Structure formats: C-alpha cells, structure tokens
Length: 97
Image (cartoon, rainbow, N blue to C red):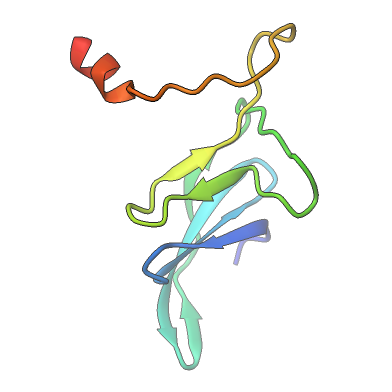
C-alpha cells in the first residue's frame, strides 16, 4: 500500500481517498471482515495544485456526500489575490460554451 495521509471515505463506504506526497490515491474496499483493500490507484497528480491547508485537522479536499466527486481547496495563481470567489450558477457558464 502506498503511504499517505488525509484519508476520506466515499459516500457509499466502498472507497477510501487519501493523499501521498505528490499524488492523490483511491483504494476500493473489497471486504470489511477481514478488511481487504485494492491496490492504490493514482487519480490525481498534485504537483501544480498548490493546495491550501487551513489547519492540521482540516483537509485540503472534500468528498461530495451524494456524488462522491472531489473538491479541492486550491491557492490562486495570482500571489496578490486574496479572498474567495464563489460561482453559484456555474452550470450556466458551461452551457454558454
């Protein structure tokens, strides 16, 4: 198993996501008694992501409780930029393109 930290369960409890030093991984739960996991799969290279760590007990990502999609807290490319931008109608932006 690839070493890592910051684990999170999928909404169905059938997968565990976790961070390595430069990669983001997922393992499938094959059985629970005894616990058997699949080989880790690399699902994201984090080299250029500039993830934000708010504190030791806070993850830099979240797993959507229904869809299982991953959401990352990422630093802006502009070092002078501060604050947060929320895009509430993002689907309309996709439809325009």
